[in-house]
Amino acid sequence: MIKIKSPQQIEEMKIAGSLSKAALRRAGSLVRPGISTAEIDAAVEGFIRLHRGTPTFKGYGGFPGSICSSVNEQVVHGIPSPSVILQEGDIISIDTGATKDGWVGDNAWTFYVGSVSDEARALCECTRDCLKAGIEAAVPGNHLGDIGAAVQELAEGNGYGVVRDYVGHGVGRVMHEEPSVPNYGRRHHGVKLQVGMVIAIEPMITAGSWGTYVLPNRWTVVTDDGSLAAHYENTIAITKDGPVILTEDDGPWCSMEGGV
Image (tube, rainbow, N blue to C red):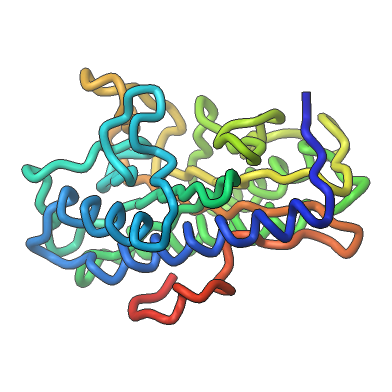
C-alpha cells in the first residue's frame, strides 16, 4: 500500500532529508586517492550521530556499513572496507541514509577520485541528467512509467545501459515503502502519481550492458561486463506545485565544505 504523506509530514521529512544530504556532502569532501572506504564510512556515521540521527543503512537486512560505497564497475551496495583504497581515476558512488525524528532521508551521488577519464565523466554527467529528467516527470497526474521513460530515453539515447534489477522506491518512516520506481518504462503506464507520495528516484546507469550480478559477499552489485556504473538519487515529494526535493541543503548542518 502506498502511504500518502500530509503537508506537515513532508515538512518533517525535509529534516531527515537535509541531514542525509549533509552526510553525503561530508562523504564527498573526503573522497581522494589513498583514503579507504571504511574511513569515509566512519566519518559519515559519526556525522549523522553527532546530529542525533541514525545511519539508516547500518544493520538494515544485516548490511554492515553506514554508507554504500560502490567503486567503478560496482553499481550499488558496495560494503565499506579498510582494504578498499581509492585510486586516482576511480569513480565512487556513495549512498547515504539518515533517520531523524522517525523519518528517513535517502540520497546518492557519484564522485570523481582525482582526475577521471572522459568516459567516466560523460557517464556521470548523463546519469546526473537522468536524475533531473526523472524528477521533472514526477508531477501529479503523470505515472511511474513517465519517470522511468524519461530516464531510459535519455540514457539509452546516449548509448548507456539502464539497470533493470534495482529500482527506486517509496520513502517514509522506513527506507523502502511502496511503490517501486523503475528507471525504465512506458509513458502513461504504471501507478498514477498523487499529491503526497514520497519516492526515491535513483538512476543506475552503466557504460555497457545493463546486466548485473551480486558478488559472493551477497551485497555488492556489479555490472556483468565490467563496465563503469554511476548512481545518483534524491528523495522527492509529489506536490500540487510539482516535485519537491526533500534531500536538500536546508538544515543547520549543511554549511560545510565539499559539494554535491
